[in-house]
Image 1 (tube, rainbow, N blue to C red):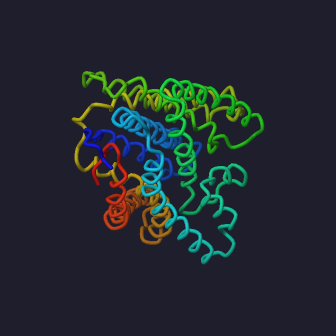
Image 2: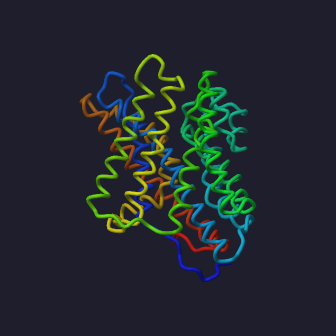
Image 3: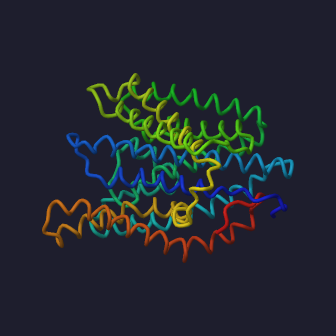
Length: 359
């Protein structure tokens, strides 16, 4: 199906994928302690999910732009086949494994209704309604939001055209803050709310439209300053989530999300086009980042249950859990990619219109 257009692949963005995963990993690996100086760092890591959303939207939008430029249209069927082959196999296998394993250990722990919600890619809405269930598949609520975006965006881009899609992105961005005001006033969990999180997809798409396939030419020092500024925006954004008795109010949440969006945008622009950071081991870790995200909770929990029985030094337990959890996560993700995901991804290549990242 490929039409001979130049490959669109930026290995530095795989490095950014891995950085986004590290934010999430340390958020879940560091113990929650409001009195610890690491608490702000831990909660800052939650924005790694937002960075994933931003990056995914940029890449999808750029590929759709290049496809229309090369062929004059956007092939929706091919797009959905590619996304299904990339996301669903590992997602459904891991979700079902968690369902059966959790209920074997403790019958009724993993409700059938929760399974159905996640199978129907509405897991985030179930979490918003019923609250989280701390099993290995807990982080996969974000996959539901990703899939909802995939369902919506290609058709919007195809049928609204470029100008209409830009307007749609702006409307979606504004609607995110209207939703934030509405659901925060009702005391709902806005973090897992699709309408609220869609602002990061909007920002990623708007950056793709604005860049028009180009990459910024920046001095290395400017990139470092931008990267630090982006992390700083994330750090200050998270403080609105944890500081003060009214941390769940709109006047706190709105600046938190705005700073997070600005931070994600600045971090992305500091990396885009900087091929010198594309060190092969880090690029590889970014390539397997989907598996890293899927497996990391399981591996951290395995380390937490095992290591306290083996170590006698209390001060060594937490660092050992983090290191062991990370090594196990990489090992499982690498094995999954090599023996399960890559064969499927090679079949996915048949449905590529614009060549993207090699398997």
